Length: 346
Ligand SMILES: [Zn+2]
Image 1 (cartoon, rainbow, N blue to C red):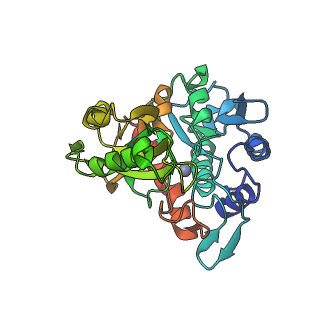
Image 2 (image 1 turned 135 degrees about the horizontal axis):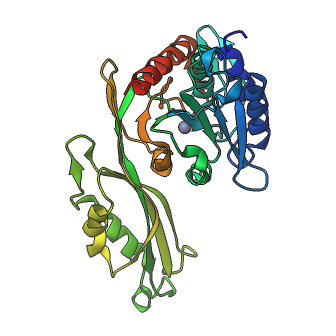
Image 3 (image 1 turned 180 degrees about the vertical axis):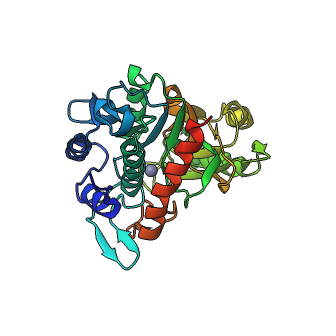
C-alpha cells in the first residue's frame, strides 16, 4: 500500500464541515478511510450523532506484527471538530488554507501518515485517537478517558499547533462570573436606588491591582474580561450587572480564588469552568516551548504521560485566514515518527 498522501488527506477532511456539534460526517469519513488502510477502528459514541474515532494497528498490520493482537503503547491524538465558520480547502504555493487546516485536520493527516508508516514497517506500537468537541467543553476527550481502549497506552502525543516544537507546559483556565445586585430607581432620583453597574465596575477596577499567582516556567497569571452585561435602560439605576472573567492560570486555581475573594460580598463569584495547567514530557533533540492555551490533555489522563506537538501556528488557528505550511505539515509526519520511536524505546 502506498504511503499516506498527507495534503490529500488533510484537504479531504477540511472539506467536510465538522464545526463542533456536527462532527458526524467527518467522523464516518475518517473511520472508513482508516479501515480502508487496514486499521482496526472503534467508533466511540459521545452523543446521538457524534463519536470519537479510535484506531489500532489491528491484526492485519504488515511485517511480523501480522498475527499478534496489537496493543499500542503510544497514542497520537487530536480533535476533528472546528470552530465556525466553515470554509473549504485551497492550496496557494506552500500554504494549505481552510477551516481546520491548522487546527487540527492537518495534524490528523500528519499523525495518520506517521502511524501508518510505522505500522507498515511492522511496528504495532502506535494507535490513534481522534476526538470530537475539543473547541467547546471537551466532551469527546472526557468520553475517551472512559474506555478500556486506553489500557496499555503509556504516552499520549497530543497534536495542537506548536510550530513543530514540543510543549513544555500549558496554562490552565479559570472562568468566573461576577454578579452584582442593585436596586432599580428612576435615574432622576439615583439616591433611591443602588447601581449594580457601579459595583461591578468598582470590582473590575480593583481586580487590576490584585496580585495574582506566578510561576517560574509559565509566568504570570493573566486574565480577560470577555463579557460584561447589565442594566435595563439609560434612565434606570441598574438592578443587576455581571461580567465573565477568564483567567489563564499557572498553578492550581485556588491561588486565584483566594486572591479575588476580597471582592465578595459586594458581588457574588460563580465558578463556571476550571481546567488545570499541565506539565508535559519533553525529549532531547526537540525545541520545547511554553504554550498559553489549554488542550484536551487534562481530560485524557488515562492515555498515558502527555506530550504536545503539532505543525502550524496557534496565531492563525481560529482566524478567517487559517492555513498550514505544506512543508511544515510534511515535516511533522517525520517528527511524529521520530517521537514515537523514542517513546517506544523507553
Ligand atoms: Zn485545536
